[in-house]
Each structure stands twice: as C-alpha cells, then as structure tokens.
Amino acid sequence: MTLAAFLSILLIHLLGAISPGPAFVVIVRTAAVDGFRSAVLAAVGLGLGAICWALAALLGLNLLFEVAPSALLAFKFAGAAFLLWIAWQTFLHAETPCR
Image (cartoon, rainbow, N blue to C red; front, side, top):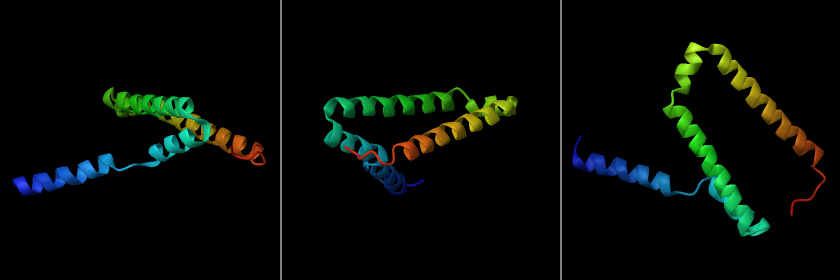
C-alpha cells in the first residue's frame, strides 16, 4: 500500500470518527431541554453502553454464542422484550407532551 492510499484511508476514517452521530444529537437535545446534569448523565450512559459492547466484543461474545447457541436465542428474546417494553411505554405516554 502506498503512503498516499494509506493517508487517504486514514483521512476518511478520521472524518467518520469526528462527524456527529445520533448520540451527539441526543446529548445536545437533552442539554437544551433538560439541562446540563441530564445531558452529562445521558453521555455517561451512552459511554457505559459503548464500553459494554466493546468488552463483549473483546471477550469473545461470538465464541460464547457458537458454544452455547441457546445464549444467543436468550439474548435475542431479551432484546425483543426490551424493544416491546419501549414500544409499550411510548404508546402509554403518547399523549404526554414532550418538554
């Protein structure tokens, strides 16, 4: 690989890493609506979530799922249950105005 190709790939990855994503939008909205403390708590929560995913990847979650396919099925059902709970809460509080 030439130096020019390496630098262009590095630049593309750097631009992707520094561009704001959905988490940034959530934090900014939380700061504007609920204040600094809530935004910091949301940022800490997002950071802890990212750490959990990184640790799961590093510790070989894929290997666990290959060894115990029932664990993958349990994770899928837990994720589906969580999404259904979020949907139910959204449905219940649809009339409540957003602050």
